[in-house]
Image 1 (cartoon, rainbow, N blue to C red):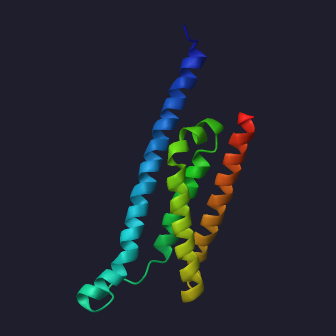
Image 2 (tube, rainbow, N blue to C red):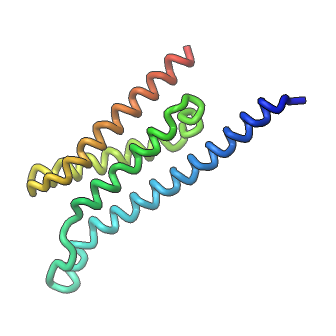
Length: 139
C-alpha cells in the first residue's frame, strides 16, 4: 500500500500533467490565432481594397512568448519527458515566430518585433538545455 507521501506526490504529478496539457492546447490555439491575425491584413486588402488591419507587431511578440512560458513551466525533467510528443510543435512554432519576427523587424524596422526574436532565441536555448539535461540523465 502506498504511503500518504507517495500518493500525494502522485496527485501533484497528475495535476501538473493536466495543467501542462492545457498549456499545450493553449499554445496551439494561440498559434492558429496568430496565423489568422497575420493573414488578416492581406485578406482585408484583397476583399475591401484597403488594409483595415496592419501587419501584427505587439500581438506577434506576445504570441511568441507563449511557447517560452510552457518550456519554463516544464523545466522539471519529468514534466519535460511528459511533453516529448509535443516538442516538435514547440520547435515549429518557435521557428515560425522567430523567422517572421526577424524578417519584419529588419525590413519594417518594428522594434517591438525584436521581443519575438529574443523569445525565439531564448526558447531554442531553453529547449536545447532541457534536451541536453534529459539526455545526460538518461546516461
